[in-house]
Amino acid sequence: MKHSDFVAEAANEFQETLVGFGILSNKRIFGVFASPQGATFTVVFTTPEGLTCPIGTGHNWQNVFPPPTNVRVFYPG
Image (tube, rainbow, N blue to C red; front, top):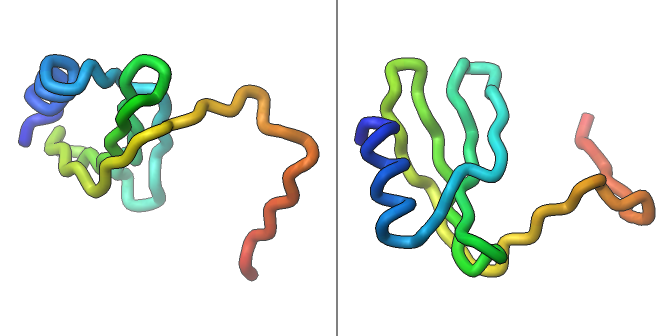
């Protein structure tokens, strides 16, 4: 669906707004929309043409700012 249509639907149905995003190597945008206090969230891809595809949903989203210093993260390779 058009990105603007997704944004409107997420806001109207779930009270979700964009809480974070990043640009992937293929120029797609990876985004997370979440409702207030993280009750629900939706993960989406948006293409350079402006089409948005939800790829997953969940509940209990937590924003972590700044990232915790006591968590170790390992990257493959």
